[in-house]
Amino acid sequence: MFGFGITKHKRKLSEAFEACFWPVMDQLGNVPIPMQSDPAINASILAVCETYALSQNITKQADIALIADTIFEEIYRLESMNVQNRVDVWKNEENAQFIQAYENARAQTNADLNLRWLTAFAKENFKPATGLML
Image 1 (tube, rainbow, N blue to C red):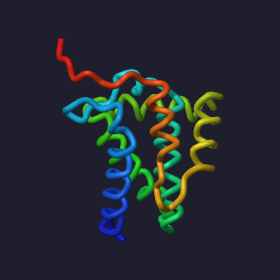
Image 2: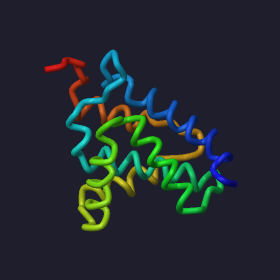
Image 3: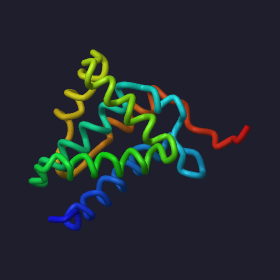
């Protein structure tokens, strides 16, 4: 597969997450900063990526990790690595909030990527980003 076949899946996921988080993004496409340190939202992002990949018969862990990495970079840009490191810690430490959100997201994710449930969660839990530079 050499990564070429997953490009369309990365694009589809990227479009789905952009639409999902649009209500809380600023004019530059930035999400609220508190999302970076929230176990539930990040567990949901990871679960959607992994569940969708498996639904598309992508089973190589390296390909699934590449897809998730791309999505985290799209959402968090320069802070992506810090967020992914936190996700690894939450996952390894079996953080209760992270695990529960991960399982809930897996149960609600399917191949059509209807993420209205995640949009509702984001709107309920995060104020829209303002795009203000200090």
